[in-house]
Length: 447
Image (cartoon, rainbow, N blue to C red; front, side, top):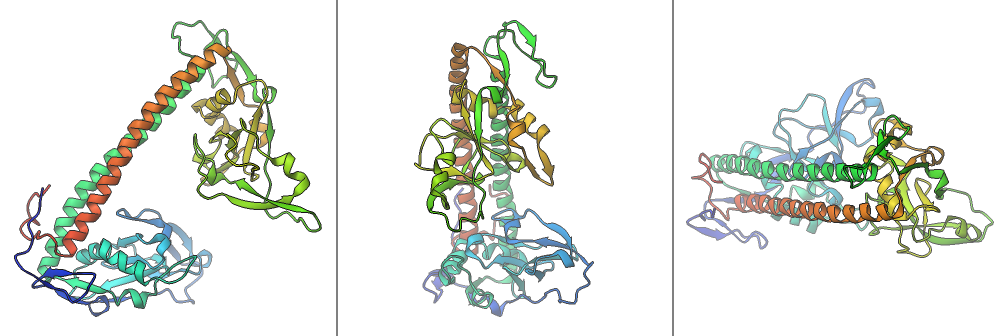
């Protein structure tokens, strides 16, 4: 649907704002809002419990997504910014630039990072409108332009509130906020549907892989007990062999080792973040200094199957095949390189990425809150289901076809999400800058 424009516009007097509706005002944000009014005092009782929101706990369009409960004595020094209903928190750090959220009926002990500027609207500024205005592209672009610093660009809160704010009449602000509440909710629902579709595709992909690597492609094949209770039956002519009989394992280098007095060499090394599920992310590969004579011991070889030793639950055991993209290259100690001897790298990678292997890793791992790790000893006891070579090839070919299909469908859903997010952002910017007139639509369906 196309939206009407206002009848008359005027020059805003601000080059980057251009023309605005004739009856709108333009004032520095600080004239209609205060900022950073409340902070927790340093003499707060140590046992006072706070709900803390760090910058990483706010996502663009979603608002506050995570918070952590802790006593004041355990809180980081940046956990000081108190907020109240109607405040808008805006990240002053460009790394998290779109971390912007409107505070709605918060608990009394909600505290946010001092990395946020807490904007508190005064009477002339509707809180709902302020939340959308401060997340508009025009405002964010000005934050970027006024940020300073190289490695960690940021803007001072007093500079942020000096940015010009567009001010429709209060009733019109409320109408714009009402319109955007409704329209963004529709878009958010569509985004959620696509995100759920991606989750279902991932689950289906995992189920297909797990089935074919444990049961094969012939539904009529005679079966036998695998001898492993949680694995169940496997085709009668397949073998089940511990990984240690089929491959060797190479551990990586731990950071912080003392190399004093040794001739060293700087080499690229892979971290857990580089080793994704089925692919490598080599956009950021760091280097590490190791003794030159240790390079042969740690160097990766094409055909090694990389696996994460641990981290978040979703990272445990995930990996892919190393194809020699960098030479030389090594891994950190949290990434295993499994070197096949009597099994193909492709089959081993399919096995370690299957549901049954993931179950094994979790059942043998050391676990703490949201974290898990598996030892090389336990990894090498992984039971590997091994069909004849010809059947391996057939299963791998089938998996490649299915994976390609799931990847294509996932890519389409991901593209749909990106387009919806662009529409959401564009709609907000158009409404809060007066490029569309929604006054007659605030109380009606606008789809």
